Image 1 (cartoon, rainbow, N blue to C red):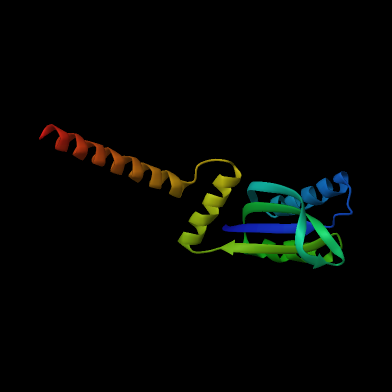
Image 2 (spheres, rainbow, N blue to C red):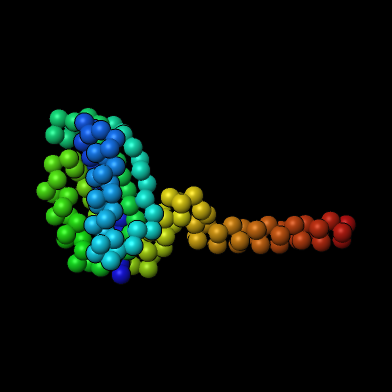
Length: 142
């Protein structure tokens, strides 16, 4: 299974129930095709950078998931035929570095400290301990 991120923007004219049903529909598409949704971000209504189909606002939704590559074609096809989707993007994370970035994004979405951040904090903590030890040794010799 590969790592993916998808974001889609729904029309602002939809009511809350319609928005929730569209989000659930796309989540079901992923899970029915043996995909696993790691986390998702419901970003809500936001201003668009430019008008799309005469709309200045849109409802943003982001999902991080693992799936087989064959499922992506079906997901994109369903995005295209839905008139309520203003824009969509599916990003594939391939290399080891990209997969680590994907995990960091998932951790950030889940409000957990990322793997890379934990490593940095551990080395920083160890580094500060060495500095403190060196300073205490230097102060004793005087």
